Structure formats: structure tokens, C-alpha cells
Image (cartoon, rainbow over all chains, first blue to last red):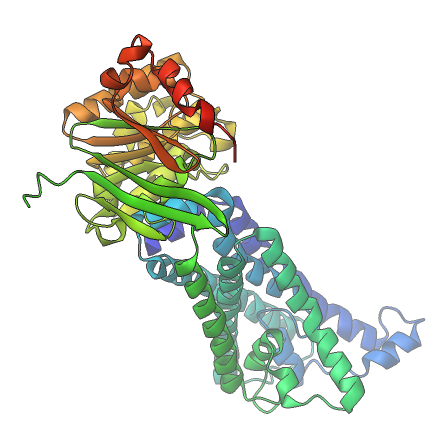
Amino acid sequence: MIRAELMKMRTVGSTWVALAVALGGLLITQILLVTVLPAIAAGSILANEPAARAELGPVDTSSTGFQYGALDVLGASGSSGSIGIATIAVLALGLIVGTTDFRHGGILGAALARPARTVILGGKVAATAIVAAVLGVALAAVSLAVLLSLVAFSPAELALQPAEIASSLGRGVIAVVLLALLGLAVGVLLRGQIAASIVVAVVLVGEPILQGFVQLVTGSLPVWAQILPLSLARAGMAAPGDAALEPLLALAALAAIVGIVTAAAAIALRRRDL
Amino acid sequence: MNTHDTPAIAVHGLHKAYGHTVAVDEVSFTVARGRVLGLLGPNGAGKTTSMRMLLGLASIDRGQASIHGRPYAQLADPVGTVGAVLDAGGLHPGRTARQHLRIAAAMAGVDAARVDPLLDDAGLGQSADRAIRTYSLGMRQRVALATALVGDPSVLVLDEPANGLDPAGTRWLRTMLRGFAAGGGAVLLSSHILAEVAQVADEVVVVARGRVVGSGRVDDLTVHHGGDLEAYYLDLTAENAEVR
């Protein structure tokens, strides 16, 4: 079943589009991060826009915080609450796997071949995890290349130890896999590509809005408001101590959310008429 | 009971309702090995729903449906036992026929080497690497039929398999089904093309408004209609032809 699901993914153009957008989006985002932001801060560009410089504040490319940002495999470190292009593409990848069979009737062939429908979902989960892991490694390679280019072509020194780099990238790969699985589970749960896309868009846009609202009302961002998928993925890749939740705890919480939505998708798939 | 005495397909007292709408009501029939059964009825009569319940794709409110004595979900080798065509086969328009069949083979655990002969038999050898979106309806039906045969099954469940087929395709389907039955296979076939059913089916079951309103050997049923299955069918369904 896993091999069949991998073949399905490989033979659908939208899978390749999602992968290309993730990689291209991350490359552009991270190059902008390590070139444009320092240039604005230094007044090399937008020299006549002091307000922009003041709002951005000092940018220290040698700081561990900045370099962790350069290693963000989802390209979402530009500012607090930002949504990386790669994040959208990774969620879309899972969503495509989850909904394509329902859209084109392939789920009937799968259910005829494997009447135990949890096996079908298991195959999709495994195949999505494999492809997302490969994508995550490729995204990590892009991020690492950007960071190494930064220290090679600028006065910045490498502030991170190899173990810190490996740990951050490794956690990034896990976050990519979990977000892809979240997209998959939402797709299988809702079946319709448009409905699932709307829900994912609401999560992407709604989470920062909700957090902004909570912050406005309470004056701070309580931990409960950070137990949301995108925040957890970001916290999972952050430097230890930089986020309210420790990275591994954040990834565990994200895995729990993915597990709950996947369980709901499995129940729905078992109970539905196809 | 000797397993050879068990009908290849057995449906007994099948009942299914969607809310207050009864889709299938006490439908019963059997298909023996080596026989072709035509399942006839107006649109919305419950033919497709009955087939989906038989194949475990839709839940059964009441009654039983089995293949070789077992519910579909309990078959040890589902694709090696039953080949099915539903909704033109669930074809992704961006895939080629060859990719579609290879995926079907992988899902069934069948050697991919079986794909090329199936494509050739279905007359798709030359166009197997074209995207399915460029296919005519008849070619899609051929892909769906080839997919149904991937597991070399002994039972075929086909919902409107002749839709869109040209005369050559129709003849190919007829020959294939008769050959399949002659080899000991059992076929459950739903179709609105009554002339085709008359040529290929040994027996028919006519359903209307979810209920069986007629069943038996084609020759016996049409004896008072000059052997014309269409005349028999239209007479039988005239009072129950409401489209739902």
C-alpha cells in the first residue's frame, strides 16, 4: 500500500508543484532574510526610510538568534507570526495526498484492494511521511547552504555549534513531516479539496490573528495560545529557551494534534460510504 | 456446504435507506459460477447502491451480501477474487493508463508485469502513455475494465461498463464477458443498453424503486414479448419508472 501511495504521489503534477514551491519559496525567503534585512538595518537600501530602519531595529547576522532564523526550514522566522511559503506548500502537499483520491474516485480502487480502511490511511500516512521527510532534508540543505553562504560572503562569524545546527535542522525535518501529516489528516477528514483548503487557510491566517487578539486583550501571549500548529512548528525549530515551549515539547504537542486529527480522519473514513 | 455449491455472488434481503429515502429494499439475487447476471432498472432504482453494498463500499442496513460465501471485507484476496468497474474506474486525468494500472497492481500486490498484457488486451497498448485526460469516454471505460482484471479475478462486478464504448469496444466487452463466464467466472453487470444485456446475460434481475420487480432467465422472461428484453423491461417498469 505504501508503494502504491508513493506511486500515486509521484504521478500527480500537483505533488511536484508543492515540492517545487516549498523549495523555491524557502530559498527566496531565506536569501531575502540574510541579505535584505541586514542591508535595511545598515542603511544600504531604503536609506531614506528611517522609519523602516527604526521598526526593524538592529540586525546582528552574527547572533545565534539570527542564524537560527536562517536555519528555519519553513522560512517562517522573518517576523513573529509570519507564514512561510514553505509552510503553505508543506500543508498543501499533505492536503493533496488526502483529497486527490476522493476528488477523482481513486479511493474506490483503494477500498476494493484493501477493505480495511485504516490500512489505506496507514499507507497514505507512511507515504506522506516519507516524501515529507525527503522534502524536509532538502529544505534543511537549502537553509544550511544559505547560512554557510552568509558566513562565507559576509563578515558574520558562525555563531552556532555543529551540534546546534544539526539539532535545529533535525527538528525542522520533524516539523515538516508533522505539518504534512496534518494537511493529510485534514484532507482525509474533509475529503473535498476546496473545503480542506479553506480550513487550512483559516488555520494559517487565523492563528496569528487569534494570537494578536489575545496579546492585545491580555497584554501577553499565554502558553495555551501558543499550542497551535504553526506556533508549535516554529517553537520546535527555535533555539532552546527562545520560545515559551521547549522545542521537543512543542514538537510532541504538534504530534499530539496531528494524532488527534488523524484518528478523527480514520474514524470518518471507516464509517463513511464511499 | 461444498464451497463449489456456494454461489459466486449471493445477495439476500439487502436494505439501505438514506434518511427517509429507501434506496434498496429487500433485494435478493444470486450469481452462479459461469453465469452472467444483468442487473437492470431505471436511474435511481438502487442498482449501483446494491453493487456498492456487495463490495463493502456502502454500509448495509439490513440483509447480507457475500462473494464465495464471505462478505467482501472478509475475502483473503479481494482483488484476486473480484474485479469491479464503478464510476468509470476512478481515473486521475493527469495519469497515464499505464501508471493507473501499475498503481492498481501495487495496491493489489500483483506483479507489474501483468500490466502490459492487460493494456494490449484492452486495445490501449498504443495510447498507454498518454494522459487519461486526453482519452475518450470509451477509452476510459477500457482502462477501468483492464483495472478490474488486474488481480485475475473469478468474479466481475460491472456498473455500466459499456457506457461510451464504440461498436468495436462493445464487441470486445461482449466477447470478454462471455469468455470470462465460459472459463467459470461469474459476472454481475448493470447496464441500460438492453440489447447488449440480452446478448451477454444468462439471467436478469429488474429493480425499480429499490425493489426487485422481475428476475429469471432471459429466454423465460421474454417468452411473451417475442424474445425482446427491451419490451419486457419497459412493460415491467412502466408503473415504477419514476426517476429518483
